[in-house]
Length: 91
Image 1 (cartoon, rainbow, N blue to C red):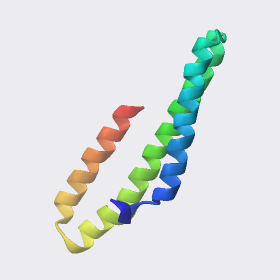
Image 2 (cartoon, helix red, strand yellow):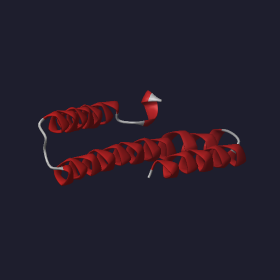
Image 3 (tube, rainbow, N blue to C red):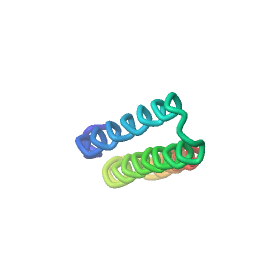
Image 4 (tube, rainbow, N blue to C red):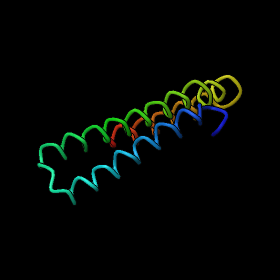
């Protein structure tokens, strides 16, 4: 897995999301208006979606390409389709 993605970028993004989630948790205790909390939840959701896009792109550029060039192209495409399906359920 490490071969197909920029792990530093992903770790940086995940730490930011964790910070956003901690801030949301704190907002709940501080009686922040619901609308403001929902805005922050949406921002965290979008950030997590972007992490998924980065992982999927890395998978396509490395694993899928390698599978097509050096393996079973049909199986590789089938597995990629499953990965896209799993990712699309996240939205």
